[in-house]
Image (tube, rainbow, N blue to C red; front, top):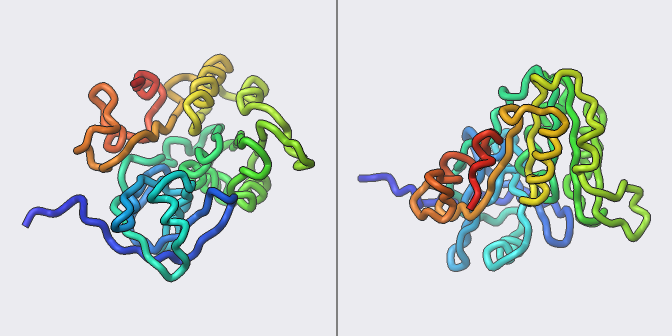
Length: 264
């Protein structure tokens, strides 16, 4: 009998970490190979299905950081530890950490764009990091919107971390401004080999990649994640197709020299 690629598997909700009113991380039971930047199709019968990026990988589990924005994700937020969701995947190519080993690495992320690169940052901010140097520039709208606060504190021990907000009406103590403001100031020793990853809202990605190239980064040393309308995850529905490229199959991670041509 032919395998049904749309058939999901049941996964237990191990834990739920609340970041903001709208963003929670669901730690889901999962045993199998998976990379940062890949995604699962998460479903609830009667409500629908949504693509969710992997924000963390552990033995026997994956983290899925979900923003409550619609029918499916609204229902997801009613689930509790011990309950279950249905999942398909992982899909997409994800980030291969070997591409960045032995190099100066700059990760620029905005808002929920931190989720797919969290695993990459954690890898290179670890005690056994094989990166020459790691710089993280992350931006959020306000201090109340910041995700992964404990991770940022841990990353600061072994990486240069710049955490900015668009506005701070209280006393959060964070620098106010855009992530792009810090790109010209990057201390890079070898621009021939330095690598960068950019993930976030399209305007942020456009101006960040522009800034990196103006700083001297090579296009071929920049990677982006083009997450968009990945409905089926297996290249059948065509919702994510740009030109002849299926984002769900060939991406969502692209080298910028290719990804910059994917405009719809």
